Length: 628
Image 1 (cartoon, rainbow, N blue to C red):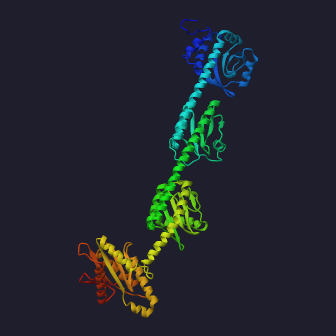
Image 2: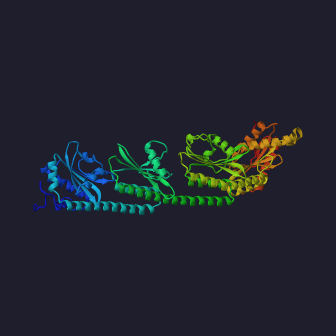
């Protein structure tokens, strides 16, 4: 041996030289690389053409060191194994034939065993049998060579298993310590990339999770192409699926939990990649770890959602029991649904006497007649079947087709077997709502329908108390109450008192029923010419009153003239009215309700005296008469 411990052409390779070439690493792959370089050098006198070193993986040999063209071996494992079992020394054999080359050749085949299991193979290719025999006769220290290679193989395998075990432990800790779906999926993909750095990873998910855009997600579509069917089989059977074709290798691992399968991981690699049994075991365990972690995260999220849903129902029930105005309750529920569902529009629609009424507190879009027209087929269906509706995408729905609002939830409000109305939730994004949203909306509708019904009945009763039955105007007592409140809170206002001219003559000529019709017509004209915040009331008999909060005298006179003119031309039989006007302003002396009414009454008396069919302001010295 030379003093520098370096191999020279033609001399026997020693273990020391071999280890030095491997940087003294007891590692199968480092030893294989060192052996390949040294054997080519010592085999030159014997015309050594090439060396290929293989590692056994199930029924295949995977090239560890050699040329790209050496990947294929013509004999299978069982044939190769039988060569060595037939001989006394099964560690080396000279074989004739084209094992790794297309030209006629002779091969020195060295089998690599560990605990009686063939784990590898080294093939040296020579042009003649003489060269092969000469190389086999004396260039290797066979027993220490085999022992060291076996130690390296065992060490590499142990290191790989240990690395995977440590990685699985880390992933398990991180996954089960997180309730974030995205974090769980990222940990799984990171672990796969560490073990298989050149593989592509995709996810098929079955749940409606919000996943980060940097994760590769594929839809799990049933009954599509063969590629999708393998993912489908992995999902339905809960078993690993492997597909190898001339282009690529695909592995589909189900994300199994204890209760369900939550998706499939697809691993994509070159078709010539060889999968070891321990690789498949690692993928399976990793997928199961991810599946259990996803299940825990999903159950945690479900429990949170359930808790939030119960809080929403409790808050709603509490709010309904507060006996607030119906509008306030609807507004509260609308806001709660908008926030909890992430929706854009919420509407409460009432069915009354064949009419569709949108309750105050709904979002403004439901006051759009075009939207209600689009919803009408859905309303008709729900009136007939009384079933809730879940529309994922309106473009493919036969009852509700809308170009803007793609997602819809509609739940009937039923009380004592009677359909009262519908709760509707809309959003422009398709498939915006989940089935959990659908069930929650049904619970909210169920809990709130009775309260809505009672609130509406209560408000109707209140309105009956403060409303004149004949004219549907407010009662005098309600008018007085509102004027007192305005005198305390507003800066100014105007009071108008109307009286039907010659009303006794109308009754005597046409009868009291026509007289009632005349009062109804005048009341209708008054309501058509005022704002929502103005208060029209029947003051007594044929006298009607109107209070205009925060309206100055000049504007009030214009309104009064408009009403006087409209009565003259729009009533049947034709009648006229006279009007007295009084006003107040906080800059002037404090006024009482009694004074305001007296001044309007004085103005009315003056208007009658001056010829009727006119208005008069008692505080002014002049009268204003507008002819139609």
